[in-house]
Image 1 (cartoon, helix red, strand yellow):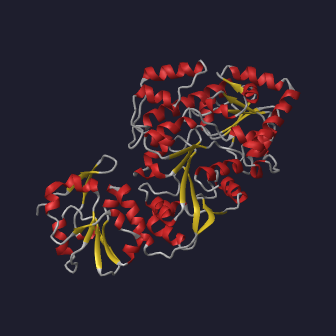
Image 2 (cartoon, rainbow, N blue to C red):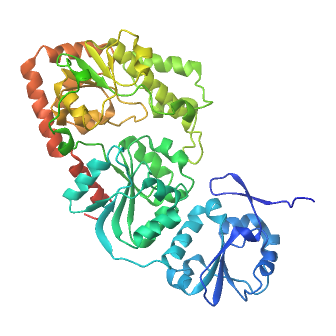
Length: 504
């Protein structure tokens, strides 16, 4: 038996996609007298055979699909099928109709079908009034979950953490159930956590009256490789690195705001004792961090850097310059930042530059103690003082407070970004020594200048200057701590979020 030839289209992301055509691809909802098809599929001439009881139905079709299928497809639409505009398909209309939906359409053209799917869902749920709630899709292990919950609570919000896995993988059932118990003013995601790649969750939340915002605390274009719909352009975006605002807007993002990281005094000024493996660091330069992010090799599998570009990048690091993501984008000639995975190549360059930069600095740093994974032993050698990974909330504040000084190197993935160390160390009562990056413009120059180094060789000089002047170091620490607590807490950042989304 010859297998029927399936229709192929180019989907929303510019990729070829085969569309199945059989009755099983359609789902029917509602018992209304009037019938409306949401998508006719590749073989509209068979719909009367599959649904013989349907008389004179309406239909909505995606213009992108209709254009690709051409005149022949349009001629095969049965007589008596009447086209209706998408905007006429409202929750009120859907509530009184029988709706037959062609399911593959949602993943092929999610920007078009997502809003209609949300209206269909809203037609069948019990509406609640919007309340001063914020949903933070995080787990107990996620950084920033506790910090944001505390900060939003200070602003009078009731914080709730929906299951991020269910919200992202079962949005069509999980979110409508939640939205019938409460409708939050704001859904605030970190790095798209809790949002499905096709944007159904976003459309459901928006249809309910909830504002959706995403805080991109890492490189936005690395995160966007997992997003399969243009819905992200309609989300309120916040970035920790201001250098990404223009590229995101050039891709169509409608609302992008600068929101740097911050400190949480409720978590980092609490009392705590050092564990046994962390003692003896009072006169040490301490670095806390992992040697590479989990599954890095898998994420960048198959990618290689041009040897000439890599040699130039290494020389730049030795000269105190930064071969960052934007530099690597220029060298690799990758101009398509979304959709697709091409952007991983400059990201790989930036990641490798960051790894080389951290290694270079740690090998130069005097009196060094590292808290991290065993990968550091391979990089720094068996004689290096490498101690176990520490718990971020239970142990890290005490380490920052007790260390002689703390060392920071900022990833080239974020050309103008900062790290949590820029805030946490001072908040905990420690002293930070950090590399010089554009992100430091957030702080007064007279405070930033004494603690920054440009090249790895400068670390010893800066460290000795601060170590030899106790009084200046104490005054500097007090000034930094006061600045962080006054202007750079998560309460400060939440105020900016609410202002950015129009809920202040």
